[in-house]
Structures are given as C-alpha cells and as structure tokens.
Picture 1: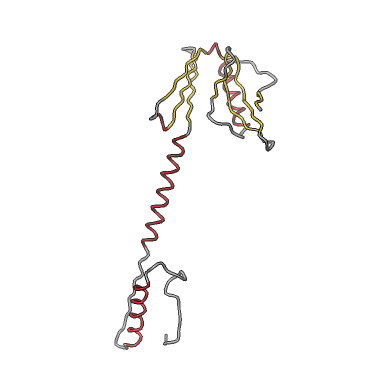
Picture 2: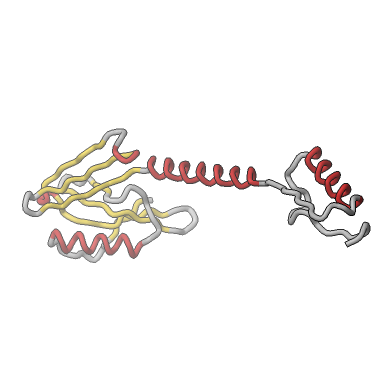
Length: 175
C-alpha cells in the first residue's frame, strides 16, 4: 500500500458518524502512514446504535400489531346439545373491556347460512349467521370475508351438528 492507494473504510458510502469522528480517523490513518515505526493501526467504527434503532422500531411494530389485533371483535360460539343451548360470547381487547354473552335454546335455531354482501366492485363477502325463529340473525364471525369455502364448511359442520336439513339456497344476499 502506498500514498495513492484507495479503498473504502466502510461498506456504506456515507456512514452515519459525526464529522469530528471522521476527522479523527483520517488523522490516525495519516499519522500511521507518515510514521514508519508504527507496525499496526486499529481504527474501530462503532455503528451499533443503528442496530439498536432498528431493534426498537421492530419491537414497536410488534406491539402495535398486537394492539390492533386486540382491538378486533372476538366471537365464541358454544353449541351444547345436552343443555340444549347456544351461547355466543362477544368481547374486545381479549375480554378486558367486558364480555357480552347471548344465550338461546338450540330449538330456536331454524337455519345456518352464509350471509352475502355485494360490493360495488363486483366482489362478494360472506359471514356465517344463525337464523332464529324470531327472524333475528346471529353472526358467528365478526367480519365479512371473501373466503366462501371456509364459511361454507362452517355452515355444513354446524348444520350437521344441529341436524338441520340442507336447503337449495345456502346463502342469503344483502345489498
């Protein structure tokens, strides 16, 4: 190596260190090159702060994702043939903000259907509902989804469990 050779000191073109630190590194390198008695040069560039910042951002994003997921509506449906009841529990924030429980007789359930809504972009969304004798619909899923196959399988399993007859129209439409 001589006075005219060049090689990058860092893998990035513009390292995130202060100008004074860069001047100090340049001074050490120049002193090493001008002093032939020096056998070794050790210059340490510590950019671990950047790693810590990325780690903190990742932890923040994970906590934010948990908070968003916890804010969603959770529905638990228990169908009990021995007690002849269906119990729907609805809660948010993992139950810390309270829980609403609805209880009905299994005899009140007349059908299990996929409720379908049509969007303006010619796409359909579904959710599973229990139809009661009173005409009320009890949603078993908190949100509409585009997954028809999953919803249809829930309808079939629930109908089999309740021993309800299959009708030609497995879904109802809401516009």
